[in-house]
Amino acid sequence: MTLKLVRFSKGSAIINTIIWISILMASCDIVAAFDVAGLTVRISQLISMAAMFFFLLRIIRFGNVKILTPYYNLLIVIVINTICIVNSKTIFNAVGYDLWLIFDCVQVLTFTYFLSKQETIYSIVHKYIMCFNVFAVIGFLQFALQFVGINFYVTQYNDLHRSNGFSFEPSFYATYMIMGAIICLYLLERRNYKCMRKRALILSTLLNVGAVVISTSRMGLIVLLLYVVYRGFMSLRIYIQMRAHLIKILFSLMPILVGIGLIAFILAIEFEVPFVMHYMSGLGVGGASSHSADARMTGFKDTWTLFLDSPLLGCSLGGIDAGIIEYKARNYTVANNGGASMCISLEALAAYGIIGAFFFFKYMWDLTIGGYLKAKKRPGEQSEREPVYAMLIALFFEFMILQLNQNVLRPPFWVHIALVSTMLQIYLRESHKNYTPRLKVGWLYNV
Image 1 (cartoon, helix red, strand yellow):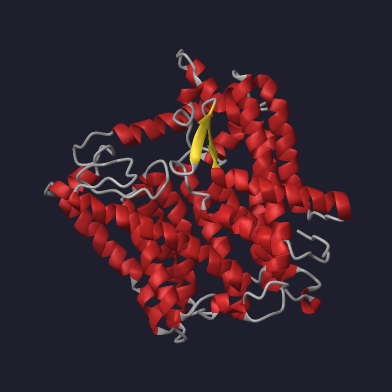
Image 2 (cartoon, one colour; image 1 turned 120 degrees about the vertical axis):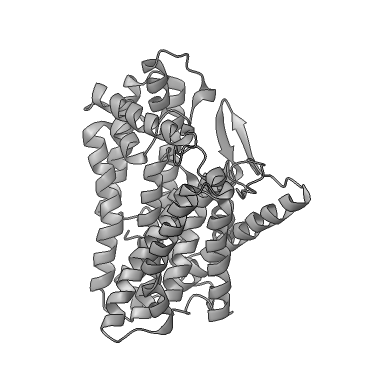
């Protein structure tokens, strides 16, 4: 985004603090949250609204907010989603989700506007990693307390000892923590210690990767393994060229280690190792029940069927679950939300129709691939570019993991989009040579 610079007042530091508190609490689903007419309202969203209010005042006062073309794709999606409300089976829920979509899109603008004037790319990544560290510690605390019989906001309390942070369930927690894990892994692999010192980055990596592991979310572990294998092959290519450091060499061994792990895993299923069989429950593997896999496949099929019923005019985001439930001849209530559909790409097709989904996918493409290509072309040091790459790669893998889940409106996903937009704004702006952040945040990445 190209947002014209204006001189900030002393109160801008307060707005900055408000935004970071909102970012910290973005994954809180069961703490600092409450239900309103069946919809979950999070305190983090209310805090964001305070920043949005100040953003509105800026627009009224200065009237000089400029938006890059890719963002207009989101505005088109909002318009199409609003039109599709007429095709929804539940107007109330459809309007609620439409307002939620508008909120997320305005939040992207607000965060980009304020943070791009108050932060550096290093301070953003440092603070963001610290937010993940907080919830990684919470996850480890949950995991440890279960051994002494204490349930600390654990939503799936059983002998497997699963951690969920303050999210609805372990899979939601892993979907959030996977971003922090990938950012840390990438920066550690690249030996980029501009955002935080080496020891702090190593500790953060252990915390975030460990949090994904103790969530025992199969989706989280699969995506984490995919990332490690991907980076392993990339490091192997560099190692062959004899330009690798020790960390890159270790990463290059990951595909081999993952292969060995898969062989051991297959053997464990073959010999019915109790822990492995318990973990495979719900997938239909090795004779175990397949309820979890069946539920996901049913969600895929039902969402696709709903799209095929009306491919041009969708049913809006708030009408997907209601449409599926009615299609299956069941009674719909707001309490049914969140369990019928699956895969955010299929949801985009079902909600917006082909045209609206095109603009949604175009926005994601322009933000990730387009952002990468623009950052790559910009002259500058590699160490300054790598934090931007880390955020873009994390967004890509977050988008991947959401293909195995539902609800594109998850707050952490849009917070990450906002921060990626902010970092690209800072990194690509034409006036960067003459720009000095008003907040003195250099100490954040020298700790």
